[in-house]
Image 1: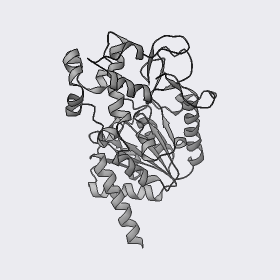
Image 2: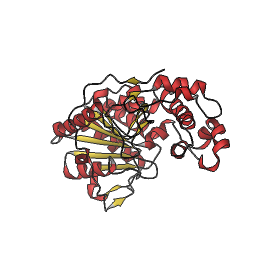
Image 3: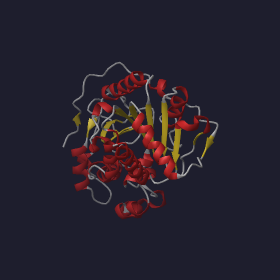
Image 4: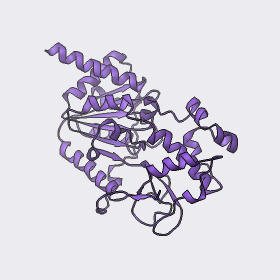
Length: 324
């Protein structure tokens, strides 16, 4: 099946994404010694009192939701790749950078990866719970995840900015034009036809403009395509910030570590510090440190995200029932 141009509007004027970035980390990080139950109650109160919620989601969220890229899930599904390519095949993330000798082998790997992490999974319960938690307030999602789970869980396209691409899309490997292509059906066919970690040569996609190689639409080098849809999402993110700048906003940060902290983690700390009506809820097992300077306007819950979300939802419900 041929790749399909996504049905998107004409490219809009490019947004300077740098305006959203912050490369200045907090200098007063601490693990809060507040008891877990109290942090849960405070988080629920932050969300309840907020006029709007800005979600920032990183890889840790999808891991907590069940899309583990390593361990048994990797070895169970990529045994033939591990056997063929050896020690470099340690996990799905690292395997994506393997220098496959042929295009047939490269797409053999990616078709399997995309099927397992983008096509096969339905809406995961953790993502659905997050949607239930925020759906009745104005909200927006800024995410570095590329597995499409926010859409599957019910979030509207106009409320999502996926900065790093999407597993269901491909682009010219050299970015010769500002278009991305829907390749989900192609990946399904590749996954069915793959043998010995390779796809048939006839299925290798070629750029429809320059006839060169295609690549995943993932931000991994200077050729990442920021098409019209990407720039529209960036504009909507800027608009959300402008509309709610002077109000009460709960920054709900989920699974964002120090891999790409300048997109979500550092900007969220900066905004929470500058806007006195904003609060920061950081859920991240192992990396839940928060700026001590935010004092009573931040929580950093060092626990499994799925458990934390369940408990925050329970705390919200108990607070509502108590008020009734």
